[in-house]
Length: 328
Image (cartoon, rainbow, N blue to C red; front, side, top):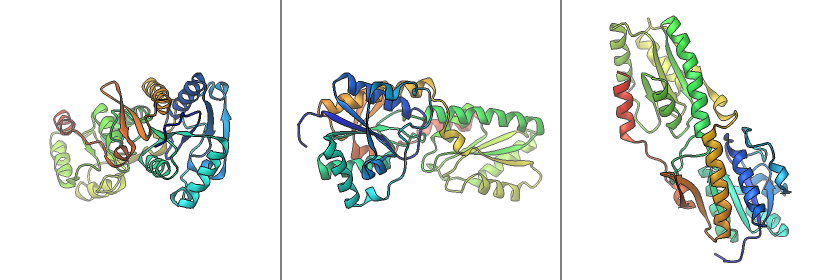
């Protein structure tokens, strides 16, 4: 890795959008400018790098965005960047502007691309974990998770009111294709009777048994929170099975969907995004390259990109025990 000083940096948001990404962009831009670096925004993730959709940013480019969800830099999936030719094109676009450092705000797929790119073209990259799924190792939080989970909790609380009024079983599907954190946290916080997540094999028969037992003791209001990536299937599949076994139970399905991805970020998401953005720029300047900045036990933590890419967070057994005991 060359040790030449980083003087001009590019910042991009890639993969799924997450509330708090704007706060991270703002922190990167302002920290870079404070240190006398030139900062360039790349539009639509790696697509903008390939298509040369890059513009210089000033302090006022990021005014009044910390409270907004989504990302002002926009995001897209980029097929071209998977191929060497696409990455070469991206490199040439950066080179002609003299950009010699990159900050990538996104998930593990985005870090994968960054790792490949920096190895091929010797451009140092630093990753900031921005994903509502919280499925990246090396950090206790990812930008967007807290907002998404609070959105889910608010929605599930409202659904419980209706479930209570009608003595209904509600099966609620939250986001999380490969990770059950949104389901786990929102389920515990709303007192769900069952939480189904991709990390655990779903024993649908024991779910049905417990619902039967609850029916016997007249506990008629039940919530099941399902992560969309649960191996049994999403909420619709679970509902189909439950209805076939418990035809008398009034069952409803509610899929929360993309409501969880948007909205104004919570205080926590704005804080961690600001802190991570600041440290990402500091990392580039001190030659700490090809790492992801994370926060562990409230301290900054740096993980090699390849490790952040491959390893997933492990769901703590204790949480599963808590769910079981508190929902009984």
